[in-house]
Image (tube, rainbow, N blue to C red; front, side, top):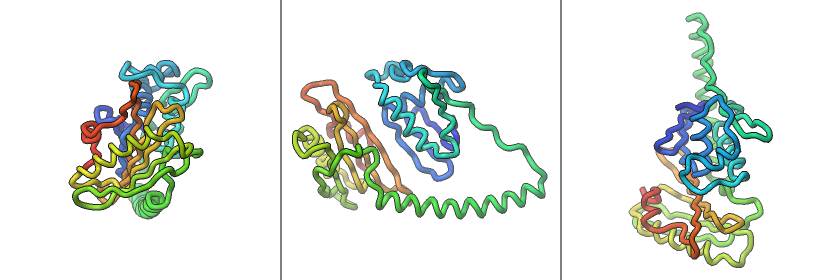
Length: 252
């Protein structure tokens, strides 16, 4: 199923940019929202329906739905973000996939393809440079602007490159739970033979109910970003475990 210039793989929970090859493993909220919009393409989906999903987990909050729509539009890019339309006070709808442009004459098509090929090559070069700059110098994504760096250290898998683990929090106190979960994550990385992830960012939501993990690395020469959001209604909470981290692909 295509959404703009991206292929949506429902069973894998991913969006793949067909131009750049960039793959995004959708967090739970983004996957739940996109799945309903795709299923009801061209029809309004009420906010409450997006919050409830198909019963696959706890009901999302309205801010979570709004944020999921924002992140989906960001990944689709400026050319296709309009496909997710806001119906004020009601919900959202996914517009039909744009149709291809009408065919033109063969001779004119050849000229267009030659020009388009050159432009695509230039755009790809610029995009690669931009992606490399963003990967190397951009702040960790999805980290609340009010958060500050609490702790940063390096973790060495059995082989391969070092992984930089950074913890973000709104204050430097009452972060025991965040540090405990980071230690579990660090131990999982140490047990890896190797890991493609170069930077891992960890933070807790304001209410302490959701653990956010963002992993950044390189795959086949391209930067890769994976975002995980884990909730745990239990008390005491145990967001992550070694077995769970193994299933989500913390190691290569």
